[in-house]
Length: 226
Length: 414
Image (cartoon, rainbow over all chains, first blue to last red; front, side):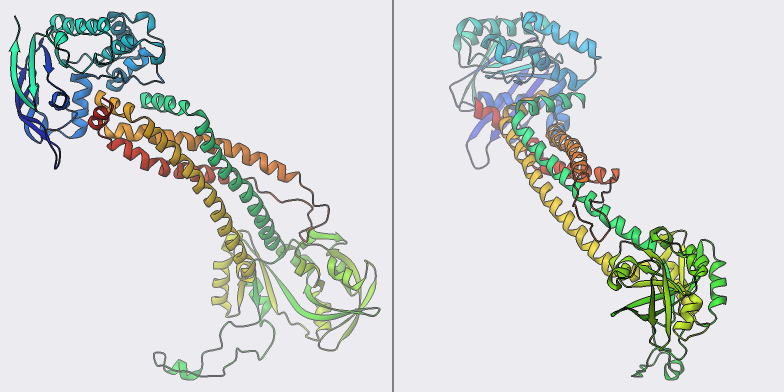
């Protein structure tokens, strides 16, 4: 069964331009999808719709086969907490909290684990991304690449089936950008998560198993590799 | 909840100085409220206690409140009858069958009653003439309805009985006449009776009106002086529970027909002043807390404005609008709570500071320092005010934060 489905999704701003026009997509577990397109092509807008941060003007988004249009904001928030992880261009780590405390925020908000298990999980996530020694450091003490990896660890905090990233390498150098893409590829391949990445970097997009190209909010190509 | 608390603490800690300023604002409001309330309430409680202490709780007078119903009114109860020029009945001055009425009152639980004849007398000592109000009392019974014995600075009430024509004068009255204890002076009543009286005692109640015009004399002597043998014109009543005075007065008036005045009615002018005083106190401290609330509004607004990205990320992580609103409400309440605690401490220090003040001169109340009321309920009330104003002030920015659209924030940042 598909994890996430977009059915004829359109998003227009009130009295303004159409951001996303009539997009239908289906995402399966383990897929690593790159959404590409020129700036202003609606890549990010589509990602926010898929991530339930925004609601479509028409059409519907189904997560685990459930129509999300019927859910109230609190239910959508609960879905984001459990099923979806976000990574943005900026790391958006809370500056007052150490790397591990940032990872702990969604874990504690969900609150299904005991305090000790919560910490162990956060630590395991950081270690898997090579941040074990930096766990107690504040974001300002970390390098750009480390911050973005800490943000990925936070996105994975509650073991989401869907990981969404909006230009996650936009602020990174080539080496760090490649490392982040390697992480995404591994998360999809080894942990069977659906990873959807918005990027304008064609070279990095080539590493994904599927590539969706948008122009003016419409899909112009949808290619699977291998 | 714990998580939100940690987040709130982290955000507030980043703006240490601004937080301190708004906390200090609240603290000053709370402290002033506490200190001013201690002053006002201390004075008012002292004053009311003085009144309750000295004056009888209920006085039954030989007057009626309303003229008696006229035959025309009785005959046509529902008709529009107007009889003009009717005066209150005044045929026989004095309370009729006072002894029976006192016996009736004394039979009620928690009631002590004593007969009194009050009347004017002109006191003459050397070349000085001072008019005074003499209260004719039965010392043994009067001690049960008044605490005047406690305010005696010389002699005792019982001395009235042991000395022929003895009087007890207010301290101020004695000073105006220039008499001292043991001196003999002349008393002339409106009835024209002249008596030679001897000062056997002095009292100081702290209420100037009483101390400079009042004197006590044996009931029998007063009846001779006023030429009204066997007449009593007041029954003074003291209650075990002073709060019942007003209802008891109404009950007695309904029973006897004579005017019964509670101490609240007698001192209505003073009590009204207290109401106005309190209104001023509450508005002044309310204004201070209002300013403090603006301080809190300001800091929470600033934090919300600065933290739009954090709010957006928290929402994308799955925090609900309620979580976000609570997060900022908690910060405002935390500032309010810190302010309240600091204010309570500061207020207590201010009260102790005021307690050290000495005026050097005697005030009319017979004190040379502030009378302060240290009531924990004032602290609780001030803290509650502070928390309510802090909560209200942070609610507006908290709601704005809750409604923030994360997509717009992320889009703007990208």
